[in-house]
Length: 110
Figure (cartoon, rainbow, N blue to C red):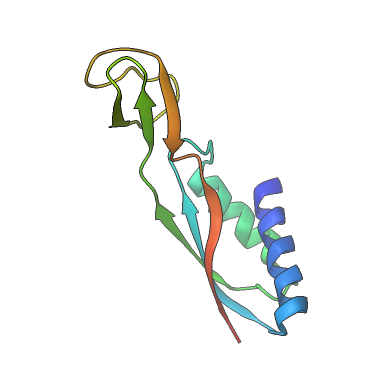
């Protein structure tokens, strides 16, 4: 719920700065390592949008890939969750480089 409320706060702040009155759609980029349950976020987003300038707005989620740098084999590898082993060498010495993002990519406004 707090993530959805934070999104609405950002939207309302930007509406004041940029002068738009209504939000029709929100595109979010979410990586697999962001620890976000997407269906719960959709439900909460609909709930917190009520009586706001984003009421009825469509929420579009863009899935980003997860990646990490393996200290064992010095390669960038794909990861789906934290604490996975390196798919190339089996090492657990991975440093996440992408996939933990949660950001508003785009708004459709009026």
